[in-house]
Length: 376
Image (cartoon, rainbow, N blue to C red; front, top):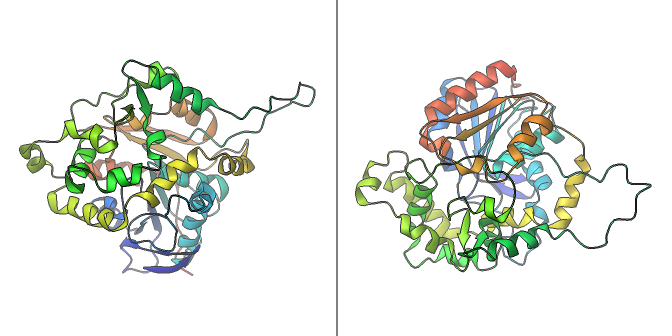
């Protein structure tokens, strides 16, 4: 536990820290993951000479000090404050910069803003599963145009209505995860927390044969409805109800080497203790107008450090925000080394295919020339 990190006591896992002077690799997890999700990757990076640090992100696991009540202020979970969390952790560990920064799922936009805001501290970045389309922009060259409508941007409401009008009616998973009832639904599911989490991890992995992701043409209800129900849910169903039909068999559980029953037990124990609300705050942040307005500080800015995107070939996350992948490669990141989609991996890349992931990360770090500084 590291105390006093931007107002938090941060629980971290480390590898390779016994040897002083090693360059720092910082790993930022997503939802509903923990630092523990990097358990297979960390020793591989440590063996390659890194000091590897993976925190439980704000709102997750053993990290304490944040308020995670639904009605608590959302500002502490804003992307810029989460970026400050990462910056403060690097400093507390005694480093001036990272040699490797990796963000997965909701950890990906945090890593992206780290590289955008402080390229001196984060001189390269790897984004996993969630492409970064760039910061929201101010309207450009509007002085002589008519005043914009005073109506608030209701694109999300229009999309929600269009999804609800489909047959059968649907809703976007982020809309559900932002709702007041989502925490209790997932914390106390009828099938039990262990069974729910097993199905959730299974259905989003390469182990579920129904994952055949492909690019979507646009952010319309008809396009989004092509995604599995764990992304675009049946209206009225909870997440535990949504994943229940995809419960793996006893034989499938037995053959799952990347998430054994004792390993799943670590997640069950942590989420049984904490609930999900702290972890769910990130989804509410994405649709909060004030916190999105704050990001316009970086309007027009690009990620100008070497960057890499890694997805799983069986992961819908790469395409779940239509257009984001193209925006990232053509506009948001000016030194994108490439897009790597890993065979045999769904959403949980670092657990499903850690060896291949480590190979890509180490090759990219060498190419990027991101030599971390020793403590001091």
